[in-house]
Length: 459
Image (tube, rainbow, N blue to C red; front, side, top):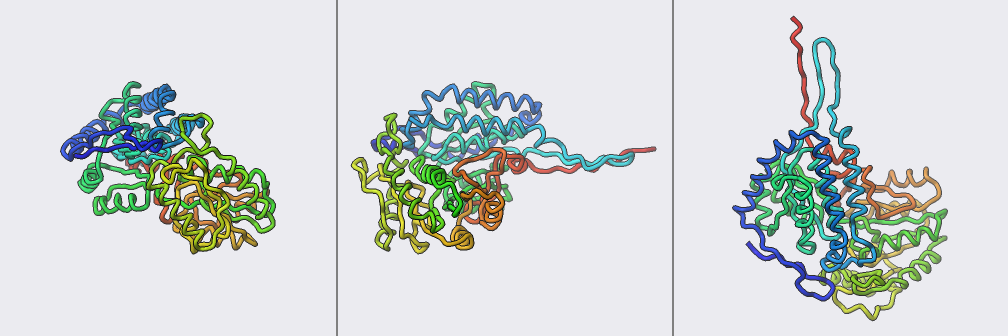
């Protein structure tokens, strides 16, 4: 048992703290979740959908309090209004497709046999959610898991300590039983013991590569199903026929929004040499227009990073790149305090020998390189340990599809970036992880197939 403390990036004060569950109480909570699952799954699908969406609406009713609370916990400016729009969009889509996605698969029936495949809930699903988009990343699994007939235990990041409490309170107020959806506070040791002890039937983790490795190691030999969304180093590629102004506006926003703390944020950009100088000039001008400051100030467009240690990583990447010959185009802002408040940065003269172009920075910095051809851009985009999304900019859909086919990634965007479409599977490759969320495939991953081969008595 220990104390979890959320340190506000606004001023370094302790914003919230909670006591973790001792192992025996955590095991009891998991046992209650397992025990409640059969009755929950026995409810009609339409009823489960109605209760989940009522819980989503109850979260929305809290939004006036949620927005400043998020700013205090992880630094996102209040001007952006929180996460409820995406939270509701994702849950609503999964609710809308549930009947078809979870329907039996008919294989054939005749006078002798009836054959079909059912989708069966795993049981108790453990959701470990991150702090950067704490509501949206959690609902990606919570909503479809509950709708599919699973029970859920949610463990949220310490940086966004209060999110799970709010979600559980909202869902319980809407009629979801307390044992069906539980929020828990756990330390790493207890979490590992629960996983190793087969407390869960499926685990979904969103976070760092080391975090994902720890989950895999704890689950080794248990045969517990895992869904892992880990690191990213998402590239943008601006082709010679791109709409330059649109590419700059979108890619810069995708690199800097939420202080660069986005799973699918753009961290490296490759621009055809014919557009390179103009792109860099416009990108620098755009970034110079950001206002760094207190996220509670509605004029602030760039808040502090969620934690001083995260900002330290970004500063180290920038300093190393400059020492190796890169050019930093943005002057240090007066509000940059050397801690969580960090000036955004655009780097040129970068190479893949620099960590800023290889390792996940997860902050408001982007490196830009010129390329001569699609072949060169593809090689550079694939020169990465990660593969979540890529953003391709061209007026030619066939060209984008052809390039996208050769990029090692989970999602290919054309003329957009940094967006999660709940109708598409959210997935990745390489060190970005395994499995997939949302879409029909999200339901497939939160259930198991069960086949029925029924021979009829004909005499």
